Image (cartoon, rainbow, N blue to C red; front, side, top):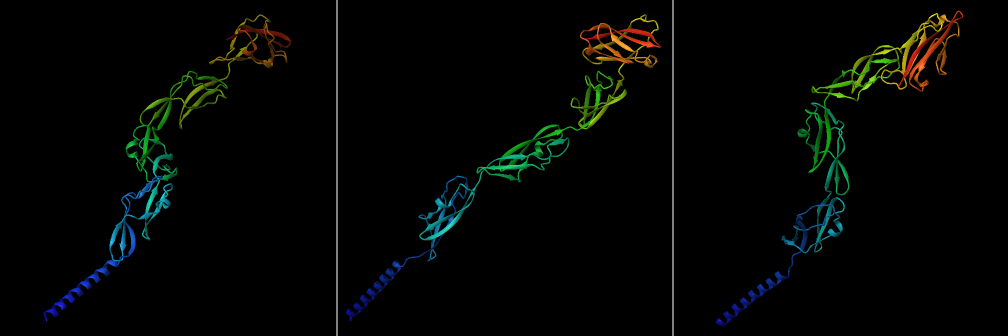
Length: 367
């Protein structure tokens, strides 16, 4: 009996051991299946500049299996050598492969801002005292490392601090965009309120046809900041075509003032004859100048009083010692007719009712 019981126990133990070994054998041969992979941590660097190399540092790829388990893997591959082109900007897709499974992630190649410039000045670059800065019309252009030029709008300026329109002068405005700066200049000017001739010109008497001579004249400009200064860029309007008191208009930057000068007829010498031929005394005549200077004529006109009283074609003029002659009621002395300076004698001969008369005067040719 005891022997039978022992046999039953041994058989039971063997059966248990056999079942356990089968169970273990069946569990060790069954493998899990890879379902997918994913980039669960992106690389540290996902934004690249033009020309930079791709860098996987920091990236974690995780494999997921059919039993629900997930395991980080390292022996994956990427197509970065083909898909990552850092010579052009834009989004680049990198594909990751592991044991027949693929996933992807994106990185970006961006252009780098190298500088900015004010490529078009504002419409308004001249300000008067008290005006505020106006950037209307200004164009700011960004230059990137790929050679591209892009107008930008979200720049800032330091005009609130640097633009002081309470004082005149050149003001520098700084423009900022993404840590880059450029600058340009505007000018604050005082407003011209009026001008005046504060010192009269040396010459205030003119002969018909002469042009205005501003020598010695001082024109002063007056501004809204109570300052004043003498100016020279003025223009003159003057008509010497007729004799009389003439108004000269001085203009400067939209403001005007006036002064008065006198325009006279050219002086004429009147000759009266005595009845006694050759008995009339010499009368000092005019002076003419070889080189015209201030108020010094190069010619003078002489006329007879009432030339109509003399016989027709009887009036003759001549300068002693020269071939200079003339006829009629007037005779003009011209310095260009003479080669030396000094005194000359001018004689005029007439006939009245057949009776001859003459008169001689002295005139001077001066240097």
